[in-house]
Length: 290
Ligand code: HBI
Ligand code: FE
Image (tube, rainbow, N blue to C red; front, top):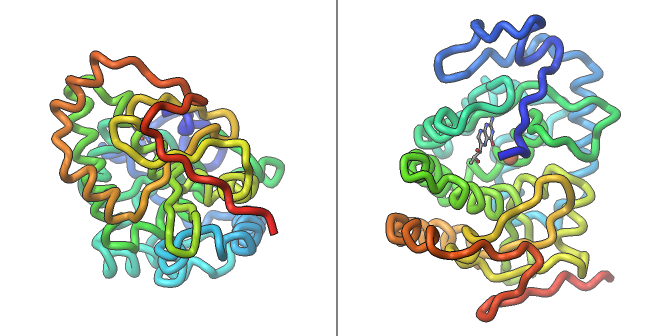
């Protein structure tokens, strides 16, 4: 999807001249941890400190526990090797450095094998707030903490396996919406209130506040077919979020669904407009400002 337009960053990712022959067949590259500049480490720390302030009461517990378990509080861009030692011990997942966007099949193949492809470059200090392509802060801070949770770890692997099947059935646009509205922009209703688990939200200061507090977006109870019929926009704050009741219920709804008849049904159903409320939608309110 186009959150992930590869941008060629001088000195990281694609080498000058665009020669991609340095990368491995699975698109992985070395992180080159020692080559990060102080300015690049400082950009991570600035982003980290902004988010750390916002997370209590907004991020789900599993995410916060993952930050602790992976020791992602340290200053600067994490060294993937050290991170992987902890992550692999917890759930068997690893982070694999990639230059940016990788082709769908390559992406799914990594996920199906419990490898999360993560960009190595970091956004410029002049682009702290929004970027269309994933950088190391989005990929590692946003996505990796939940990979320390055994239930989410299984969900993302199942998604990767499903992606390989959906691609063969030409229903990838439907499955990509599931990724978007869960892994990237998911909300979860917990006993202590609405919380964020989506990485696209958790790596954005503005969207972390907006997703929980703003009255503007719709918040609709998660239902697999409903989500797969809803397109998404990549260029602004979301107009709709889907709310799960727990990570386990999300995993179970995908494991208990036979996607084959679902895809057949979807082929005959129209898309639902992003702002639409359908009969049967369960609606959730924002957290009241205090
Ligand atoms: N590549 N590095 C990277 N990260 C992604 O999130 C990603 C990708 N390639 C394809 C892709 N996502 C999407 O097409 C899937 O989510 C459907
Ligand atoms: Fe992402």
